[in-house]
Image (cartoon, rainbow, N blue to C red; front, side, top):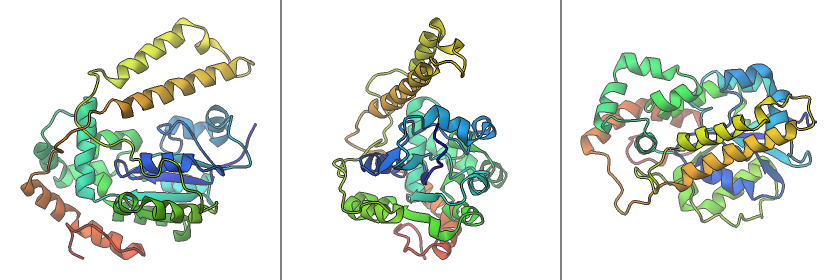
Length: 316
């Protein structure tokens, strides 16, 4: 049973290119990326309370010890309990944060949940409601998945979030990237990541020019991913998987089935996005409102990192 800890984590931001980075790193021969991207440990109370070794039994059972272990969990950035938890359990782990223009990120986040059926409001109405001071204060404190579905705008306050991480994590263990550089020069960006992780930086992933999980409003097949999850859950209940105790030799079969289920549902969610010829645009009035909302936080971000902010919406 492996007792090894994670070597690095891609902590987000959501809708900023974390899936693409995850896919690129997955190709490196010295790296093992957990196949289940959407299975958080530090932002899940139930998993965190059971401990890392229990989580590793279920998720890293097949991970080679001689490779460096990595994971991607975009729910980590908005959850301000996570930095302290990481510090307590894995104080030496390296973190990678990918930051996208917060205005574009919030719109992409909105379209993502609109397509999945979790959001019904018009974008202008959403912004109007979330920038209210009392709502903003509440959404900043939401943990994990609650933040994903209820904290569109607060999730883009990178300055506030990165500052919270640096209270627990040494700055040299945190690599800040921008979506802009990942899209404009993916080879140079991935080389910098390999340098940061201490692996062969001459390796070029075969998929380096491909973008993953590109956003959109419409589906190819009008079916919810939750329907597929429920169907696979029924299959599990109709067989004996759910009755297998952890001590049984057949427990590995249960683990493998659950991995296949999680990976298939994630693959379907990514695949079932219809490409749009004309991408929806943020109304000018709403863009200006978001620009004003994020201005001070972008200034804070600029002060605490050693990189130039590439977003033209903001005056620095």
